[in-house]
Every structure is written in C-alpha cells, then in structure tokens.
Image (tube, rainbow, N blue to C red; front, top):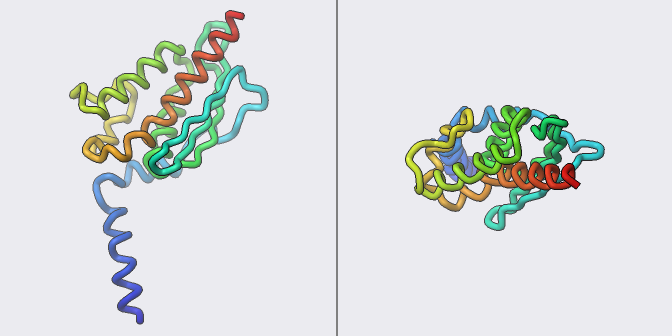
Length: 160
C-alpha cells in the first residue's frame, strides 16, 4: 500500500521541481506585500483567469501627484499569480496609471512572444520558463491588469 501512495505522490513533487515553479517563484508567492484591502480605495479592480480560476483584486489610491500612493491586494491565485502579484506590489508605489498600463502591455506582449526582452519591471524575467506554457499566462497577467485598470479609474475619478 505504501508503494502505491508513494508513486501517486512522486509526479506532484516532480512537477513542483520543474523550472516553471522554481525557488524564486515560490519565494515570491509566499511573500506578497500589501495583502490587505484598503478601507476606502479611490478605485479597485478584480481580474480572474478563466483557465484556472485564479483571482486578484487590487485597490488603489493615488496621491495629489497622480502616482500610486497606496495599494491593497486580495490574491487567490496559483503560485505564478501570487509571484506576479508580489512583484507588482513591491514596485507599484510611485507609478503613474500610464506606467502601469505600459507594464501590463509589455508583459502581455512578452508572454505572447511579441517582444524578446522581458518588460522593464524588476523581477519579471523570473517568468521566462513560463513563456512556452501559454495556459499560465493569464494568471501571470492578473495583478498587472487589475492594477492598471484600478489606477486608470482612480485617475479618471480624481479628474471628476
């Protein structure tokens, strides 16, 4: 009986050791900053991956200068979605809505093979092993899509 259980467990471990789920991805997934919704955000957006059901909600407040001043996240996603959320959260404060839209767009283009270099956002090259796994791309994009949408909405509301 123990042999059957061991054989059933080995493919799972092997899958987790695959380059797609490397140590850095798992470290990022386990350390997402700003994991609390803002009490009264200027705007928020929730994005969901239809393939795996991963979901990321991003709350945004902009400062008087139009840059992200506060962010809150609710992340219910796979390791790749969690890692992407972590990278977004680590570098989003101080970004403009246009910078977030550009990051979203270049991430999407890179994952789709429309550009060779990873986006100019710190750490996104960690997803290089996922380039050939197109089913995982929506999860990787979730946080950037939600942040760009929320920031644009906050900007539009601030303009009145």
